[in-house]
Length: 113
Image 1 (spheres, helix red, strand yellow):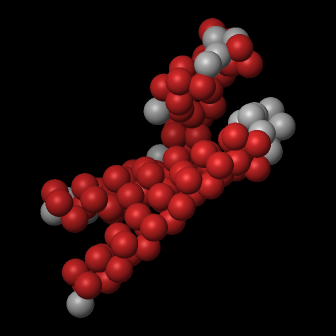
Image 2: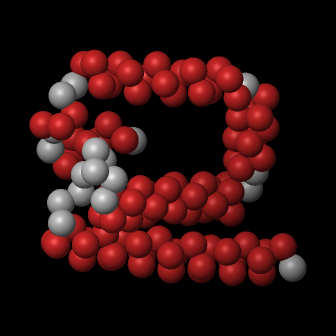
């Protein structure tokens, strides 16, 4: 029963992931993606990116047999303040060292990874 549930979640997640990437591609032909404006194309990009990461985590869980979600959730719950502070410091370093408004889409995606 657990395997059947994982397959259903995997299929749904694949569908939503592909759909949001397609919607982002279509929307980006109409309007440029802008983090500063937080427009529809940016929201679709973040949603597609987040769904892709969830899909990769689920695939790693199914294929590897290691429950990576539980380990990650336990770590995040245990060290919430440290993770938050580290994320803010890293974001600040990126913003101070790179003029993000002038970076290309490719470099922006590399930075997000």
